[in-house]
Length: 229
Image (cartoon, rainbow, N blue to C red):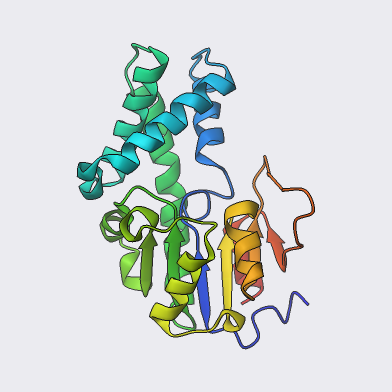
């Protein structure tokens, strides 16, 4: 089944955070690892509160729409620190997070470049309104047909309408598309429900809902796609 997964496939849709900028690592988990490494004694649940508080602010600040990647990460970490009452320089957390993202994005740049010759490509992400700016800045826009940022279009995964909108824009049907993402709940389940094939990029701390449908392919490194294309 794995070898035939991409038979008759015309389009590949990708998540961004946790997928193109990591090998399945949720932003919250990755931030927590950096906090621990830097000796910042913040319990996971407190960081989780600060993380989603910062997320909410970023989603509701119009000026964030123009932020590049570094500016976004710096602002997000500043908000986290404000919520946590930390007085240290934000660079202790923001810089390693940003550098890790750049590593994966640059690595995956060549994968997208290769895929562009054979498939229509889309990025569909719950983001802050500035994903098109980031994709342009890092150079991957040229390989992608459609970039859908939830804050720009008013739809958020797992709402199936966001995936259907992407498919409509590239004039493809679900049966001829594959979605690649790290989230079972936001990516795998809704895409399976509309007839798409799904590839799960399984991170080190996977979250799988009870009674979730099986995925078509499970990988732990995005570069493994090369073996099946």
